[in-house]
Length: 285
Image (cartoon, rainbow, N blue to C red; front, side, top):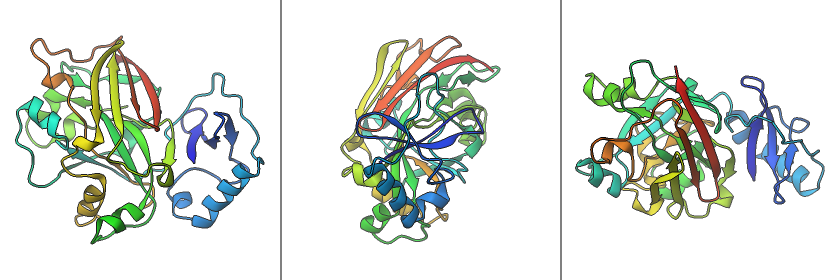
C-alpha cells in the first residue's frame, strides 16, 4: 500500500494512493498514519480490505498539499557515510561501524514544502536518502530477518545539511542537521511488502534540473537490515520512528571548487524507485 497524509500543515488527514493512481480518503477508516496505526495489524488489515473492496471515496488531488506520510514521529535516526561512493568522494575512510546521529522530529516537512536556507548559511547541501519507518518496537534485535520484520515501510527523504555548521563550527553534527525544514519526507509511506529488496533501489536528485545524484542502495556500506539491528542495540525504536539510511555520491560537498551549495531560489527534485518524487523550492529563513 501507498499511504500518505494530505492537507494543510498540522491538519493532515490520512489517504491512500490506489493502484490506478487515484487518491483515496482514509479518514473514515483510521484517524491518522502514525505509529499507533503502523503497530496495529488489525487496523492495517481494515485499510487494505477497504481499499480492495473499492469502499474508499476519491479525493480531488488538485491543489491538495501532501504532508509527511507519518504523523507524530518520535525520532529521526540518521546514518552518516553509509555509501561506498559517497565516502570516496568526500575522502573519508568507510566507517567500521555505522555513524549514528539524530535529527529532531520537527525538521520533518512535506515532500514539496519550502526548504529554508538558514541565516548565515554558506554551505547548505542536498542528500537524497532511503528512509525506513519502524512498525514494531525494536530492542536488541539479533538477526537481519528480525530487523526487516520490524519495518513498516519505506519512504524517500531529503537529509538537508549545512556543512559549515556541521563540520566547521565545533561539537557534534547536530548544528548542521537540525535546521528548520531540513527533512522533507514522502510523498508516500510504501508498506514493506511492496519493497521486496531495499538493497536494489535507485536514488536520484536534481538541482535546477541538473542531475547531481544517481545512485543505488546496493552501494550501502551497512545494508538496511544491519542498520536497524545495529541501532536497536543503542536505543529503543518505536513504531513511527524514522531511520534515514545515508546518501550516495554527488553531494555539493564532494564537488570541485567552487562547490555548488544551495541558495535561495534553487529547486531540488529527488526520487527513489517506487517511493515517489519530491520537489522543493529554497527560500531564505
